[in-house]
Image (cartoon, rainbow, N blue to C red; front, side, top):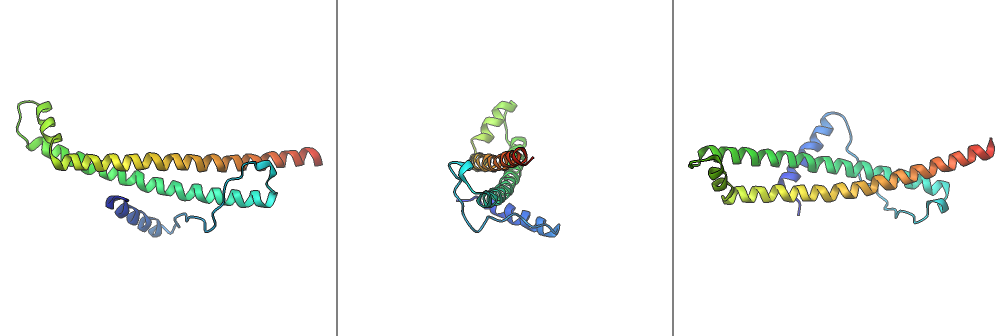
Length: 154
């Protein structure tokens, strides 16, 4: 389940993109499976894979940025709430007051929310890294083929 803060921030970011006259990347309509051997893929199919994985990279990077932005806002909410409570709680030392604030149900829930968004962000970044690697492999294969053609033809 996606956190409400992430959904709200996603809507906000989509509105920002539209207001700037830009278009957010969209997930490709067709799903391709990465070939096990790029050297056996035809030139046309390789072009389709390049377009697909480039689109997936763009789409996934945009989703990472949304989750990253939501994380920043959640962290800000947590920090402000923690600081406000820290200044208002009674205690003889700062560390004693921090312990009291950290024990509150609201702060614990906010911290859990923050950690959940951060964990989701880590997973999404790993997926994006995989897409980037696939996109790079296809690009390298195209370059390799072009270099072979130039050597052969020229």
